[in-house]
Image (cartoon, rainbow, N blue to C red; front, top):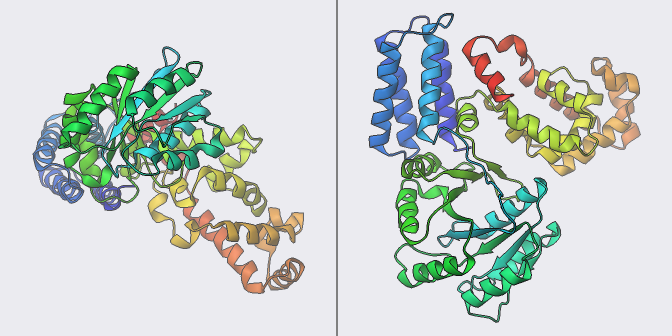
Length: 443
């Protein structure tokens, strides 16, 4: 996430962790690395300088708590101040009355329509029954795009491509779904200079009387996100913000920090194109992942969702510890496929994500199917003791599965590389303040 920002910050933390002595020179060097990483990610220079000053002052003036080394204390300070930059605490959607009406606003091309589908799916997982009303009469095929996105989710949709009256559509949609838990109202994409559209948005807000207005901002625009948030807040009260397209965006850090500066809470972030690439925004967990500390809590939550579908939770423990056999891996393939790309899952493990080789993360459906066929040709002993699979067994497994010897070796290589990358992760590496932070994440 956020491309090079996470990589650069992780390298800075590794450098700091490797220092034998923490003095003023080391602190200044670390701060320069942090400044460089943040400015390259389009974070406002004034904010970077203010953050740097705070980190420097605290690092040089604060006494480490009893039992905490100066090095651990500086790492903790960097972590805390980066969290403060993004808003400190997570803010959740609170459904206090039904129907709870959410009005979606945003600029053209911000990913608003796709984000509506993502939020609907997220709310469904929370046990709610959302419905969507399309009032976008400006963009051709807006209704059709929404329909295609949510038709397989059993989320009802109201709209009429032939009706060009957005206010009428809003009124009729509210009547249609008055028994739903949540009504999400889509509006036409705006530009902060388009006065007529902003006026219409204000009128729709007066009709809908939403419990919450959500502004969708494209994370690739960087510092401009601040201007957008301020322009929209002058038209309608912005309850919260969703930032999209944070998967690999060079300017994502700029967008996140710019919005954080306005005081409007970021509630969700979009991390990819799929409908499941969407998560509640938690500054502490987000920064933990950027610094290479992982996000165990998010990984556990994903595993718990899948555990409800009768996936063996013990295999999750095996995955986290790195002590797993081919038999464990067989049962995990389904789980990993549902949890998302391997690289994304590994990024949630402290110190593992950045080390995972590309060939260990590129698990396609085709490979998944091939590997399972190969393992179906193995004996129980081979699955639980992969080390016994030598050349003669490789030939037998390949023959029995109708595949090549190279395919069996590829599977074994994948297994060994993944296991090696995860080896050593466990409680024994979670001592001191870093461990305390990780355990806090797991609560």
